[in-house]
Amino acid sequence: MAIGGINERTECQSALKSYSSSHMAKLTSSVLTLTKLSNQDTPLEVGEAPMPTAGPNKLVVRNAAIAINPLGCHMQKSGVFIQQWPAIFGCDVAGEVHEVGTETLGRFKKGDRIIGHAINLVSGRPRDAAFALYSVVPADKAAILPDAISFTDGLVVPFALEASVCALSLKQPGIATPGVATPTLGLPYPSLDSVATSKILIVYGGSSSVGSMTTQLATAAGLKVISIASGRNFDLSKT
Ligand SMILES: NC(=O)c1ccc[n+]([C@@H]2O[C@H](COP(=O)([O-])OP(=O)(O)OC[C@H]3O[C@@H](n4cnc5c(N)ncnc54)[C@H](OP(=O)(O)O)[C@@H]3O)[C@@H](O)[C@H]2O)c1
Image (tube, rainbow, N blue to C red):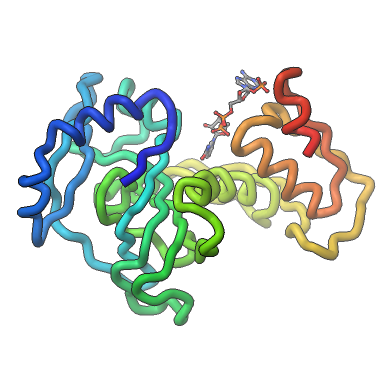
């Protein structure tokens, strides 16, 4: 399993290395997870958890790659957003569909390559987190990953894209965490046939993951975008 991200990468890799491969081979009805056991700023640990099953509108994904979001580092240190301990972190997965739940409208089948947003931040359930061999992902937060795109490249999309879409296009505030309504601009949805409008959107942090997606989506919704970024990211922000 590939692990993408910054601060926690070394910690995750060393935790996985310390878990012997012979032990992993014995896993049958349980799955490997990277778990944070307490909120006292303790290191991640490798452990076992029950094999998840796919409920209605859910997929079980066998992860090929998971992303480390800076938010995870913050959660590990402060305990913010954690609803129960032990907690499993991670919001982005890329891998193959292992099980398809009911009510997924025939969009997925076992073996499909997908990317998905794991929603443990909202649900509080460890099985909905990314740092595991198998994760549960809502089917409406997953998308087929074309063969030409690697798991590690596709992995950068789900959560950042969703944050951007929610901020731009939801018609009413969305729920980010229980009790927290995320504001939204209620703009037209992005389209390949969008009509240019006179609206101007200023994206502060335009070179960031969310910012660069916001720029592209807003442009595709017909807005003119002013992207604010440091000089080293000028070319990136201009595209
Ligand atoms: N990534 C996600 O999946 C996700 C999902 C939901 C919400 N968010 C939120 O969206 C925001 C951006 O996260 P991200 O993951 O997209 O960031 P990121 O990819 O890590 O972007 C970091 C870039 O933001 C710019 N930056 C850093 N500090 C800044 C500051 N104080 N003011 C303005 N720009 C600053 C810097 O670019 P320059 O040097 O070019 O200025 C830096 O390279 C965060 O608040 C995060 O919590 C992220």
